[in-house]
Image (cartoon, rainbow, N blue to C red; front, side):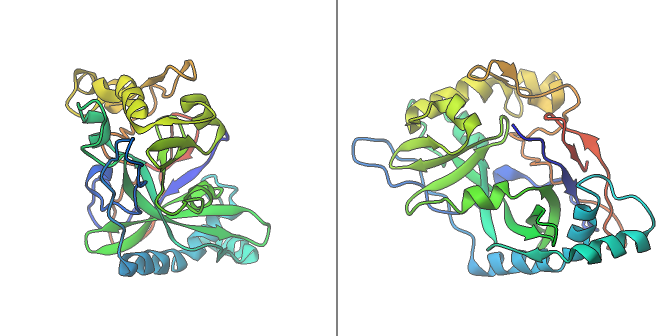
Length: 288
């Protein structure tokens, strides 16, 4: 799995974290054939939300430039030096603004055999690809903070928009962020979109019911409120991935994705953007 560097932008909102479980969901879930159980379809974001998220990404291009100029690391030098380096890269938006879904904790918690009481995924944020003159890409994440869409994170690469753009009619593309696997739910099957997903569900994928059993075996005892959570083990989420044969987390990762943080913390004062960094479960550097 490639290492990615992320930068979370804190804003003057007092928001403790973006709750994935309560975010509005987007895209349509797969229309399953009569022989396969179908999960409820998530609700698409409004056109106004997409436009607002795109505008927020546009307004943050100077910050994207500083991020790219620093090679995804914590920016160094004076602000004047950072701005000059960013201007030389002239970043621009290079994609539509697309919804990004994460595996839904409610789907994991569903005790029914088929797992059809809740959508398989829920909206985490809206992403827009940006690219500099060097050809380096960054994924700009926007989330609704209060009543306003704001950029809350910047990540190296373009995974979010690249995978989201593969959504087929009637399908839902989503990530299982605990292991970094990307899937598409279509016609009652969870199909792999990357190597990690192929290791997880096999090259041909599996039925939604089988995927439900799989993620319950991985995470059902690690959900918010569980004994695992209360034990404080990496914020209540450090699942071991049986398919990959290794732990998908480390003791330094305090981001409880299923608990709903999605690594999008927002805080601050005076409307100023600022960045703090810490290590994540995959050795990435992100803001805390």
